[in-house]
Length: 343
Image 1 (cartoon, rainbow, N blue to C red):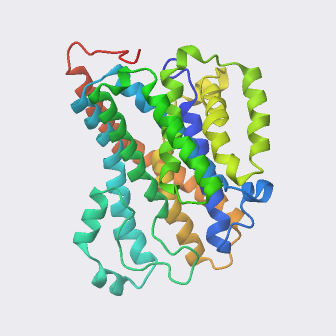
Image 2 (image 1 turned 90 degrees about the vertical axis):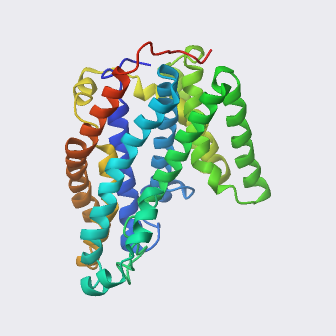
Image 3 (image 1 turned 180 degrees about the vertical axis):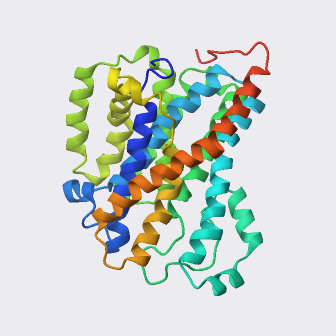
């Protein structure tokens, strides 16, 4: 992997966050995905699904790397909580106290607001538990995008347990679990049983595999090009699309993350605003649809994308960066840090 600031993880995460906004725009205006970009091309999975899958691929790579470099349970858990919780809790409060009253009758909304249910849901990293909002519109939820965050944190716990138990010291353990999960997903396509809860963890596991075997996997543009053609062909099949993305797609993504460029290098000196962009995009889009009936989905995207990115920047500088400071202080405070425990 290219050193920090010489890779493209920041850029890829922002592109993925903007892709989610693009995918949600026609779904929130039309009530279905017949105008969703990727569905128009392949009619298998929407762009939003692909983007979230890719988020989990990158996360699997980086979080397994994080444990490998600093394999201490308390430090690892503290770092992960400081990265996820502060921005999530603030976004939940903004949704509940500001967005909610704007998407409903404010008097009735506040009268029905359950502080206990909201607090419990926020601590469990669930979408804000609030009274009904945006009634009469497609997907009348205050922030449906937030459902992925609890799965992300569950994957962090999975890494913690595997690392603490010593399983990550066994080179092929993570690979075996990944193949078992991907095999279960493949069987679910053939036998038609529901294995949806394994979808995002399967991508996280696949990303972790690419980190564990990073020294054995050559990152070659020619291989990436061939795999791009193969994955594109698989995208026409619902049963093959996500399995192809979790394997060949992961190679392509990690290759792009490490592709050096002077222009991209300048971008990577910018703050990572992708998390906040992702957290605030849905409520911005819902407000646009609520207050401007009949608005074009492409206008929704054109307004929501820069607005969410701006709020992502505010989240970074006001919340995430200060929390990152606590993480770094915790890392410096631990003497004799071990590293490279994955053989």
